[in-house]
Image (tube, rainbow, N blue to C red):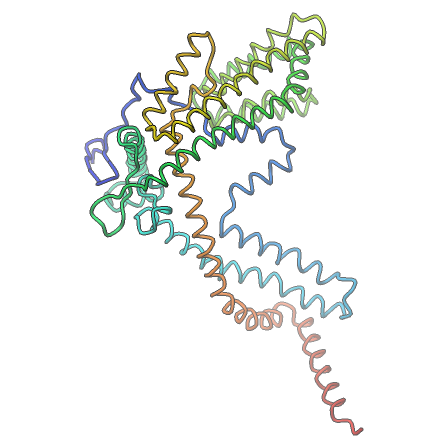
Length: 472
């Protein structure tokens, strides 16, 4: 079966088997803008390793992971505190017997609550993609890859997974193209509601809110970068530039080696692997931390693509050449201050422009009209032999991305409530299972310990009965 000949049209999804068309030459800005996640990674790279680890955990945690983490605490940490509690008046065997209850409880939590959570989350995802939830949780204009794969499997059962993935990627690309075109041409977004034949427009209130939140995110990013320039970058740039001045050959050699590797392949994973190995090699050789940071900063841009990595390296090469001929640290400081001052002015210019965009939204300007504002600003910067900082931003794409982000947050909220309700429902079952299974498990796994426990309980009952029967 020839995949390229498949020609399906799905209403309001715009699915076609044809490859996504190339971006027109007159499109505003560049086609490969740096995503917000990349900017956050670049800033996060300045944090200590423990904070980077916490951020990574925070960004990838889900409902099932929540349960597993709680179970891990219950199963591994709680037994230690129970068994070795110096304040407890019970004997060691009793504490050990009680401690073993925690790992079993943790396993039951994963088996009951965890396995109960998975179908709930899956059902909510399915309903969101099908338009069965309210508009805040409706993903029909931007269905996810998993749903697209499921759809391709249903439509083309004879294709293998790789062929279905090709079609799913085309489906996602086409729906994204349709979303962008609708934003530009009609200044709205259409949603499919399950059970209804006609698509529904987003309300003007919600649409304006999405536009404002898009600009707010861009403003927040520029203000964050401005703060970094004012509070962090000056010191770090002086340190780096002084290193360049005193270590020209070493810096140049490393950057040329990285550039050669980037130019030798289009595989970003291969480049990233090379950078990891190079970092390890230099770290083992106790190289200067500036060299290690140069590698890390390049590697961080891997998610933005090879071109951004190469752009970063060339920028550092330019800095190496700029500072090599300076005679003193004082000259370096003055040069860096001038450079930072220019960057600060660029950020302030971007912030001023984005505030104008906010005003345009309040005046009910369309997405196309706002993109024209970007285009005019870019041309204005070119005429002044400058580069507008937001030249790579395509406003319609930023709005689409923000809509996806807002919808995802609403869906995550629904998932949290649904899984919490499910956990409360399943809790009595989990407790009952634990009470039934735990004594039997201990009898089998630790018969001596279990026997002592039963004997202690019997003795306590006898003592209690004797005490109650005494004649007073």
